[in-house]
Length: 104
Image 1 (cartoon, rainbow, N blue to C red):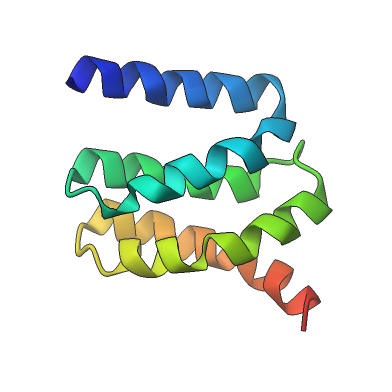
Image 2 (cartoon, one colour):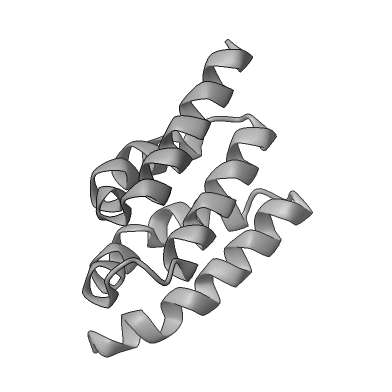
């Protein structure tokens, strides 16, 4: 099972690296995994979210739209207690902060 998880993670990363327009279709499935207890999975999700909003090839409007969809997941992840997960969540939060205030 662990090998399948690694393959799926690599496929998701490869897909969005090749074409960032896939983020909106991939992100909901990744966000649904936040409730899983696996620390390594949660670390990967937090890192993936950070990379999503740090990606310079992803359109600013798409980032702005996605920012509102990740808030609940970030809240769940930040309560994780794992230093690496929390660190990625703080970084991701700093990336989405200006995006969210464009909507206000």
